[in-house]
Image (cartoon, rainbow, N blue to C red; front, top):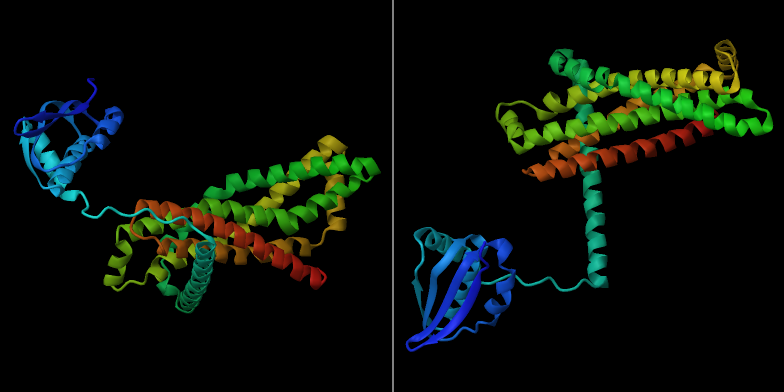
Amino acid sequence: MSSPTISAERESDGTRIRFAGEMLTQLLSPVEGPFAGIQPEGGHVTLDLSDVEALDTSGAWLVADLAKRFTKAGAKLEFRGVQPAHAALIETVSKNIPDHPGKLAPPRNAVDWVASVGQKTVGAWTDTLSILGFLGLTLHRLGRTLVMPWRLRRAALFTHMEETGFKALPIVALMGFLIGVVLAFQGATQLKQFGAEIFVVELISISVLRELGILLTAIIVAGRSGSAFTASIGSMKVQEEIDAMRTLGLDPIEVLVVPRVLALLIMLPILGFVADLAGLFGGGLMSWIDLGISPGMFVTRLNESTDVWQLAVGLIKAPFFALVIGVIACWQAMQVKGSAQSVGQRTTASVVQSIFMVIAIDALFSIFFSEIGI
């Protein structure tokens, strides 16, 4: 590949600007200095491209920008030796060079920072109101579906139950099993110092049944199913399928949101229960291996120290987690603005907001159950 060159020559009838070599983007760095050093002036100017071997958009921009600078200086331009394909590219680039190049943004100061904080605060408040409105609309459609069950799209419901529930069982069960193993191993390490190894059963049962089982299940569902909801509905928004639904008289909330949210409401408690069983099994297995607590002793101790409320506390949270995950995922999808990049951004925001809200709601439930003595 021959390097490009730009040179200016004085002639009797004016100035000749000679371009040579391959005027390609990856080769133009050496000619930036000579290009900037050419001072536009009046008179007759010839742009000679006879020796140009190749030209792409960046090279055409150099030629077009130089021609524009000389024209503004009052020069009479003449092109020489330009190939037809190069001439068409230069003409296209010339038509799209802005007459008034944009100005660089001024450096930010304290006032700009305060203004940006205010804008983000207003935006967060607006989004909060929008999500609450979307939540109310979703609850209304769910209530109408319960009153008029024939409006429910059963095929879509069962499909989403399979995707969010049955296909998530392996990963949820494995997660619960590993959490039980970790709790038993770490608990045994600490309790051995006090000769209280037997209390590892209470540690496992309370931790898994009340908190970790359903909490980690909700986080997995938010990352797995919530992101899928946002991506699928967001893609439909980009392709204007949702607008087509409204044109046909179909309600997107009833068609797209209600089956997904209802599937989560049904399947998340089941997944949480599976995670609890797997966690107890993993904890019992590790207690047997590490502490010598037999399965029979583990079950007996579990029956003596753990009542049904420990399980109920965890499962009571499941519908609230499911509603939050489904509503946030679908609301984020409805905010997609016509590009694949927007789909990716909203999917990321959906997962982050869902996990944050799940943890926040879990904290509120912990305070509530503690206050009422459960």
